Length: 281
Image (cartoon, rainbow, N blue to C red; front, top):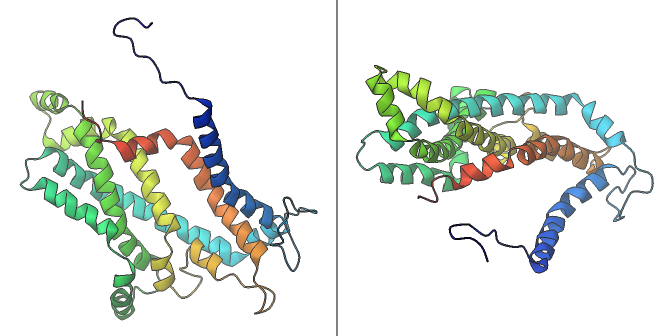
């Protein structure tokens, strides 16, 4: 029997461990098959073998030696970093206002902001293509950053507002008594305390921008502005009848591994960001 007031941790039974193992294996099989295929060379690298008979890194060498792929990686980094930075800058200000200031209908505003993330991107592709072509933003990095920011900003506002609501109001009142103004309180008190939430939001926004495909393929036409997902989609083989499966899978592994490592390192922060504000004491 446990002592009064103590909390007994729930035990994980063997059935639950089996379920967890099955889910983990099912989740890792596609990534393992991706690596498996990327190590095969020849006319049919997608032959279903448990492990390639003669594994080779030639596909990786070919991809890393392709100037178009390296340019796409650079474009993705520029678009991802700039979009994430702008989303954090504007999102932190908007989230703080929604979480702290006495604004009317804050719940409705936050609901409308969140609803933007559910808006189908395909519906705005045609008009955006026409507008971007007329004003000279088509096939440019700036032409990708603006629409990507439109969808990244609501995610940043929603996540950060949950973190700001968890910061005790007494800290702001104490800073105000000490003579700190609203901006000073925000930058010197609130932002340092919200750094875990800001880091979580940055990871989530960067991953969503890095993986976005539809806007990138519709608003670009040359390798000078194409991002990694688009560059991989347009990989060509030796001739028009050959699909470069090995190169595609090798490039997919190269761009996936860094994100996988980041998610594994910051998985607790990501979960905290997704569940922030869900439980109130």
